[in-house]
Length: 224
View (cartoon, rainbow, N blue to C red):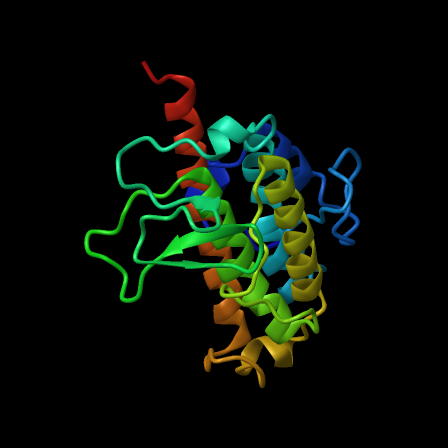
């Protein structure tokens, strides 16, 4: 039952500790565990399932619950001047804008230094398109996604619907990867390093950007 060291054990929640200590059957499933999640500490869990579960646990316990109740005003909130956001077509003051629908994403190439602060709307779009969408299309047979032609969301509800759909497709695809898939570079897409590294990169990206969005929600709630 690999757990990754004493410090990791000390950081487990009471729920996770209960799951770990009940790990008798070796099938990765335990009584009282959230449906759809397997015990990532079980030897019976495959390599791809463990990679998928690392992000899925964060998604169900941290990131997705923190997005509940997101309203349009907060979705578009600009905490400082010069933010990048998702805007009605033709209204951007950024160097460029991308998107195919009524709403476009502020953009510039090369990226400005320092980078502008981005709204929750912009960060959700970045997760949906750049972190997940491209790779779902490349690796899991989904429709190709392109930042230039993506229909960006003009409401918080629409953005969360896009996020849920793209995350579900990504996580399901990761779970189907074999060890050979993980050890070799994918045959489609520009990323020429092992698929396992790509999956770990996406995990880091969603945890990172999810934390940024969570902080923006806290700042919005407690603004003067």
